[in-house]
Image (cartoon, rainbow, N blue to C red; front, side):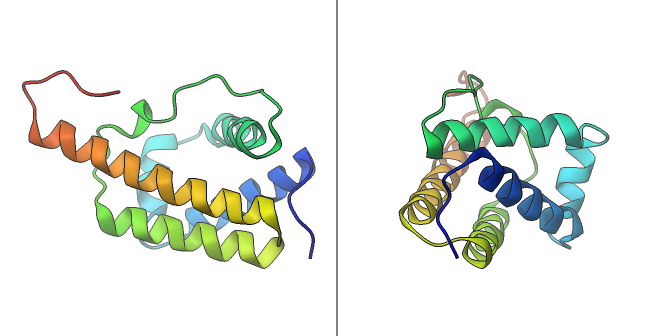
Length: 129
């Protein structure tokens, strides 16, 4: 196996991961309800996100948290998302970029959950988006 070094590697990772997500009993329904028929748009956004993060090719300029701010998700969902991501990436690649991707995914899950908890626990305050 090789490390993640090209946009084709990113596409393989993202496509494989989100195919697993769509088939997953825990996460599939949440994604299907929120993405609906916009999968090509979502996948393209994820290609650009991970391309920017891992390859330092700046093609993503969005804000990743706001679409997640009011989803019905909790710690169990983030843990499962992270498990699927780790299993997927480990089945396809190995190397420094793989470890960076897993580290960034873990940090992102902690940050997202913290922000979601803040929004839920402080309904009268503006969200930290």
